[in-house]
Length: 138
Ligand code: 5GP
Ligand code: ZN
Image 1 (cartoon, helix red, strand yellow):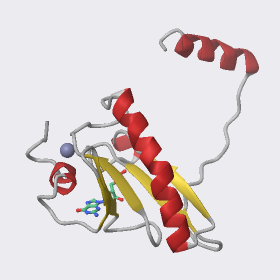
Image 2 (image 1 turned 30 degrees about the vertical axis):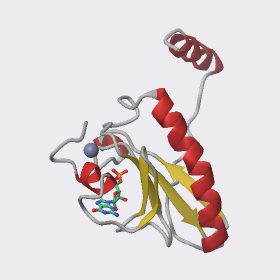
Image 3 (image 1 turned 180 degrees about the horizontal axis):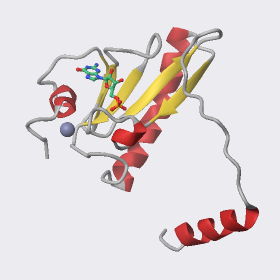
């Protein structure tokens, strides 16, 4: 169901124009209006899902399958040297539009896109214990 207040519902369903690079019955793929780099694209489901905790596995699977095709098409046109796939969930994680979307961010040698984080430390037994806790829920 579309959310009346949601900008990505409007974009995905064509009510608001966008630089669309692909569309099918489930998704619209657009160029980001404020790109991190040249060719930064977004894959947006036409149905309103808030985030990774809300989207169903079948739609998410189709979305990522489409991402492989879009990524290859982008690479052939943009001649990028790499690509980051980013997907933000929640304000703390940098989500600003609360309609699930996948970022495809082309990377070019010498660019200044910053998606870096400092590597933390772990205690092996704690890591195993945590893995066990999460595993029980899957
Ligand atoms: P988030 O921070 O939620 O992961 O990403 C939202 C993205 O949507 C940002 O990269 C932002 O530039 C992009 N964006 C927001 N509004 C619009 C819009 O109206 N059109 C397009 N093409 N991109 C948008
Ligand atoms: Zn929406």
